[in-house]
Image 1 (cartoon, rainbow, N blue to C red):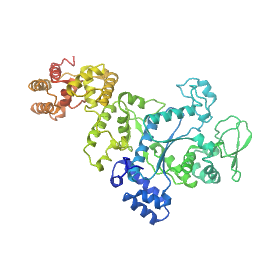
Image 2 (tube, one colour):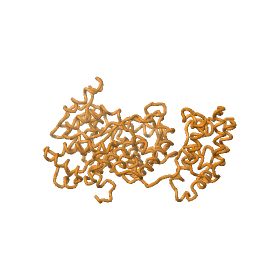
Image 3 (tube, one colour):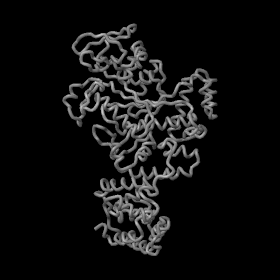
Length: 562
């Protein structure tokens, strides 16, 4: 790899970084040393070389390490890519990049985005055309279900194309794999034959996890009916290990002997997951907290198949605004498209990065804070030493190359400016911005221009109808008049937010607001019609002293509440 890689030469810092992707990368490295090297001497040597920044030497001298490291994420193409898909690919990419930094970017890695498109089609979506036609294809592999939109080769293939376009849109580096292609091409054949040979061992793991009725008919192999083309949930009646075949009863009652290879059967999903790990040599795959038991079961089956279960962790699930688990069927979540209607892709990645083992609410109200927190971390990154930089979320969001700057104006300030000015287009906002930042234009500050557009849209759609102004108390009204007088005493062209903020603080203390945040709460609730707001000095600087004075006087009279 070229030394221009943002991951080269970082192994020393990565060894001690506390950011969760580095914790995961170190766990993965420990697993690789244990699983790929046979002796303690080789493991010690490899560890010493890697810690000394000599991963290339370790790879050259220890053959067990020369195979590339495989990361994987899974996707079910029965629907469109969604926030969960983005989440898994993004977080896995972050661990991959941390691993590259840990090993000096000398150890080759690969990310498979695997589509389980040979799964049987179980339910016709509500929001598609040609539903009767789709109903005729129930039970068939998704790659054999006709595309209701008529655009793709099949429903599964069309959704695969959407997945790839979705991932490409965000610049992910990955290799797409189709279950159908892997089964039919023979890529899984050797592992499938091993599964046939160790059928009883797999059953011994699976049957205790099932109910009595399911247990009576369960088989890890799902044959594809040669007459109907459907994926069948039927018992395996006979096995012929030497011939590599099973016998099952087809839908018309005839007994059929079929090979387990060449795409003529698919495995049940937990054995299938394990088989995939073993066949592809997957080293790392994360999963949601709801799959903890499934990971344990599949890991046991993977060992039966002669593989080593991948390293990984179970992340918490997203919640809606009321704390309920997000469900596609309920439609109670926030989609990627909805987030990107109001905020940047980087702010979404930033929000997803944080605390993966804690449940996170994913709803409209978190977007403004996420955008501003992202901007704040970009600003902090500039002055940080390298050991702090690789723990900064924006290092992970931007794959080691964060921009030097993003926007000189916070999103929350733009949002409140749109609100107070009752702006309906970006030109209105730029009239204020240009006075505050005379050198700035939409061309020189493209991100600021985009944020102005997001702020306008968010205000019009999410804030305008919900704004509630209240009348001031006598104490608050007196403080507003005092602040207006102090601002009037400043030079009219003052655009220094700190100077204005000092006056704001002085008024709050002079009028004995205790705690002081009650004073800022009054400013937001009376003047902006919201419970929270931007740094008031910065807001006044960009809004203009004359207009801020008028706003304070209107608020003191109770005109805004009226």
